[in-house]
Length: 557
Image 1 (cartoon, rainbow, N blue to C red):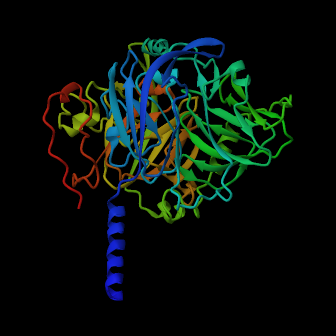
Image 2 (cartoon, helix red, strand yellow):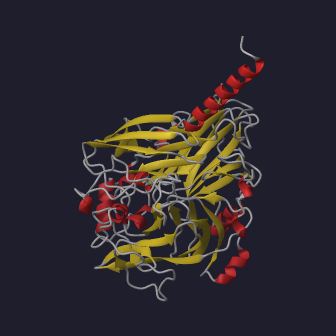
Image 3 (cartoon, one colour):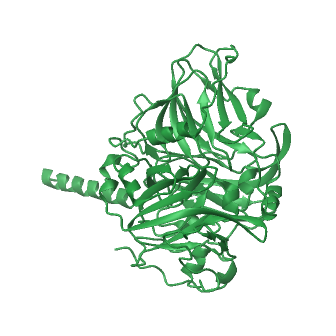
């Protein structure tokens, strides 16, 4: 018979072996196959050519947990090149899968490409969309919901919401996306939207049947994203308050709102309790800050009720001041966990020394009579060879030059230079970026690859004295932020994610006309600890076709 000591030793070995297997095990995989086609949908009373995914608009929702491996095999059955970008996904060490024209060759018609990425240490509400040309105006977008792992506490999960719904709101143009592109190519604006859609429906089609059914007394999570191309939207539900719980991947203080401004590219989560008299209620999204306001109404129905919605519609707020004050009220929940068990507030960003300040001014001008946008006098254009591939293969000559845009904008917001706009940032440095918007309309700006802290915003031009107004304690960590007209917004972040990352306007005509730049972040050790090699299935185009692969990055130590 084995002795007690022997049995204990054997048990310890089994436990250690199991732990070793767990340590080596990969995170779960989720597989998707998307067939991307055109289809016709009645929107705003007009048959529309829409980009469909597996016959659906909006496209399939991606439900996953932190660190899952997401594999999406995209079959491009359009007559144009195609890319998908995953708005808000940080793609740690993996800008190869970011899906922007500066990081990836497009998926040509009648071919396919497989994306593989992780929401590494991320939770929250996001969306994907096609990033080539003006395709975003034709749909092709869908929601991404990243849940906390089972052992990570969620600050509003006791009890958990009865259900979790994605609400994709956005402006809509009844002109074909190729027609919109030709308008911009001719130097014209896309003008004002024709209306607003909610989850791919608008007008009478949206009101014909309930969008959601609520059980009286139950609480629901709504993940609201503005997937449009130009207009900020105000979101509200008749007779119901909304508790903000998450903003772009961060848990927030749980303040209560009657309505919320959701700017283009932004996502947030609210809790709504069905605490009113049973009946139908309108969920409303209406445009902000533009003349000839448009709105969309969807029906939320209490189960078992047939009472029509109240006749009195909730009015949207008016003016910029209301929106600015609301934006400043959003606060990071310092005591809650996010994707990791440690509290969000354990990262004291306000105590880190700034190593560099980049001041960026939105630029607008005309070249050969045609409208262009840019940053600090540089209007970006995408070269035939994506800038990430040119950098990786060391063939940047003739493709782009670094740092055409300086850290301080020109004294006069003068002529635009149309070139690929790529700047460099030193790996793992803490940098302040100030965006100035001298235009009369709001801008919404997005940074791929990172979450940043939106520490301040104010009217006029920024000066170093404005730092005295910064929120250095509980600004929300996020990936998109608005810059109000003739105002500035300041963000801070650590550039610890090696790769090539897009900074761009979410106002898609501005993006299309050059309001974008890329930030190249290179690890000096060129190690697999910091960045992955180019994937084996990466597409090639331009100058890198037929070139031998560069040496592999060094193994992680």
